[in-house]
Length: 436
Image (cartoon, rainbow, N blue to C red):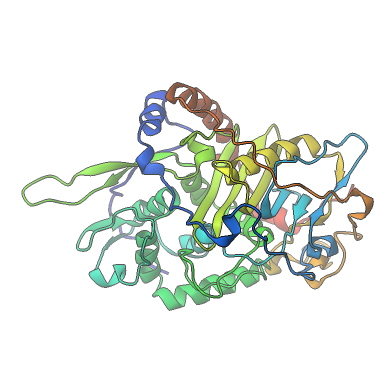
C-alpha cells in the first residue's frame, strides 16, 4: 500500500450532486467529450443474423434459477409485466441492499465486459492508494495501451494526483489512467492477480481478468450477475460513490514551455447520468459504469434510488438497433424494478463476499447459492412466471435539446444526492433479510 504524500490534489471536481445549471448546459454542448468507442459492425449486427445462444448450463451462484438460460421472473398478482423492448444478451435487476434479484435474463452468461471491468479495478486498487498521493508519469507507464483506447490525456513527465487519475478512470474511462494506477499498485501483472483474487472474494466467479482496463483480451469475461456484485461492493466505498457520480470536472492539461499548465473539462461518459447524446437522464441515478468495445458491444451497470429503495441494474450487449440501446434498456428495467419491488418473488440473491458469509451473531453460514443451493431459506423457481422477451427497437431518439437535457439533469442530480451521501454499512452485506 502506498503511503500518503501531503500534497494538494491538482484536480478540481464538480460533483454530480453539486453542479449548477450552467455547468450542465456547457457539458451538454460538448458532445465530443462524451463519445464512446464506436461499436464496429459484426455479423451479429446484420438484419436476420443468427444471435449466439447462452450455455444450457451456467453457474448457480445466487440460486438455481439464475443458472437457467432465458428470462427468470416470478410475478405476483399486482406485479407489472417486464418491458417488451429488451434485447440485451444478459441483464439483471436487483435490490442493492437486501440483495434480492427481482428478475434476470441469462444472468451468468460469461461475456466480454468492456470498460465495466474498471469497476473491479477500482474496487480492488482504490483503497490501496491515498488520493492525495502524487505521481510523475513515465513513458513506460503508458506503454502497451491498446489501439483505439479511450484516454483522459495523461502525459509523460507530468505529475498528477491519484484523485486526478481516478476521475480520469470513472469519467473518461481512461485506459491511460488505469495503466498508471496499476503501475503504482505494483505493475500490470500484479494488478491482474489482485483483481482476480478480489473477484473470487466477492464470489464473482464468472469473471476472468486479463486486462484491468477492460480492453478486449482473449479469455476476459464477466457476467451481468458478477458486474452487479462488483458494483454493490464498490458502492460501499465513499470515494467510489463520489467518483462514479461525478458528472463533469476540470482536468490538468499539458504544461507548455513558458506558459501556465492548461486545463480542460471532462464529462462522464455515463449518458444516463449526464443526459448527453439524446439520452434522457434517469432520475435518481448515481453511477456506476458504462463500456463499449467491438467485441463486447455496449455494457452498462447503474445504481439508482427512488424513495428508500435502491436498485442495481446491469445490461450486456443489447442487439436492438435503436440508438443508445444499453441506456434505454437499463432505464426500462429500473422503472420496472421500482414498480415491481414488493410485488415479485425474488428469483435469486446477490451473495455476500466470502469473508461475510457467516453471521457474527449465530455462526450460521449464509449465501447458500454460492454452492449451487437454494436462495435464502428456499429455492425460488421461475415456474409458470417465466417470461420470454422479444428483441425490438422503436428507433426513438430521446431528449435532444440542450435545454431539456439541462432541466432533466438537475432533477437527476438532486435525487442522486440521497444515494451518493448515504451510509452503506458493509455489515449489511452479511445480513440476509427474511424472505417474503
